[in-house]
Image (cartoon, rainbow, N blue to C red):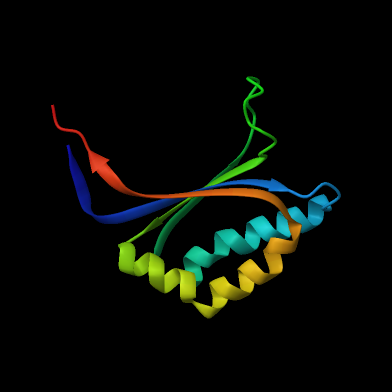
Length: 109
């Protein structure tokens, strides 16, 4: 088992606050997706809405997965003024968030 060279992924599980208008959620999602076009170290962005029938989601409604070129790129992204402003505008609408950051691991058999 070895770590893939450089790439870092971050997964967010999110529950929006009850009462957040669907149009505001849609705006947040579009703005988040657009960060990949505005902040260089952010290489990819994927999201999905929870559709599980297992009832193990603890109320989380959305998952986001973002990929960075490196740990240094993640740090640059985290401090970037565009990301900082996005976070400032989004946080008031979030009820719960879990964030996990990991380096990709390759399994060789």
